[in-house]
Amino acid sequence: MQPFTERVISIIKSIPEGYVMTYGQIAGVAGSARGARQVVRILHSMSSAYELPWHRVVNAKGEVALQDDEARFKQVLYLNGEGVITDEDGRINLEQYRYWPDANH
Image 1 (cartoon, rainbow, N blue to C red):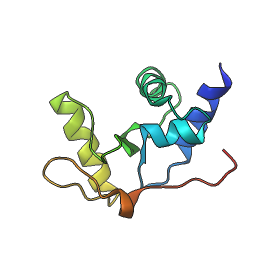
Image 2 (tube, one colour; image 1 turned 30 degrees about the horizontal axis):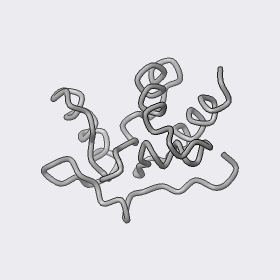
Image 3 (cartoon, one colour; image 1 turned 135 degrees about the vertical axis):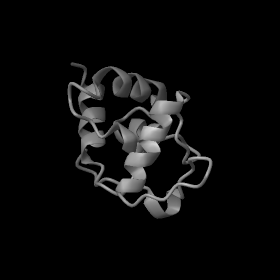
């Protein structure tokens, strides 16, 4: 496994319940500020194998980015269940719910 992928997995696993991070934020913390699409790929291909809290990752606008209605509903449901409030468009207040990991990642 590539070091970037390992860092991304570690960062996603570190997002505590009730918080979110953005794809780009995770990429930046993992060492590749332009690696947001790689984060999407890692989430898509490795969420089940590594039991990643995929629902805690949103786009840069704080929106649930999934297009599939069922997956989108599931993500909003999981986030709401953890206390993360979404508006009717599935948008999250990043100032309130964004997680900033320490520099150990």
